[in-house]
Amino acid sequence: MYSIGDKIFYPMHGAGVIEAIEEKEVLGEKQLYYIMNLSLGKLHVMIPTKKTTTLGVREIVNSSVMENVLNLFSSDAETETSVHPNQRYRNNMDKMKTGDIYEGARVIRDLSRISKKKSLGTSDKLMLNNARQILISELILVNNMEEEHAADYLNEVINK
Image 1 (tube, rainbow, N blue to C red):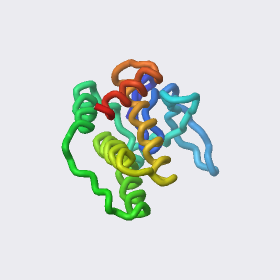
Image 2 (cartoon, rainbow, N blue to C red; image 1 turned 90 degrees about the horizontal axis):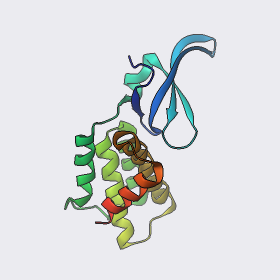
Image 3 (cartoon, rainbow, N blue to C red; image 1 turned 60 degrees about the vertical axis):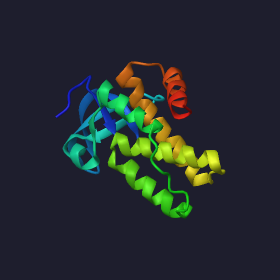
């Protein structure tokens, strides 16, 4: 169980800090919820304490893991460009839902590389933007950065 003040990651939403643990009644059922303040924007998310494992909630990574993640952007891994955009979207969505920081970084890396060769479709652009925001939210908490600095830093790493 997490505590108030813990920094956690919630797949598809990003990283944030637990501000409170409250009992709420939702659909006639009382249960405990983590009230998480996301590091990007002014959004608060309620996460049922009993479902953190099934939802993929995890502690944020440490700085050495974040460094390894950022090193993925300079790897020479081949990017598959011949996949149909609908299939690529489904594959990327599956990767993002895992909450695995490496999978999220691979989505960003691959879509960024494709965008340098050809124009991305709308769904790919949205996926890339969402994946970037999610990684930036964790980068903010891991490296204690401001949002703008974290975004600039990620752009610098991607464009090396």
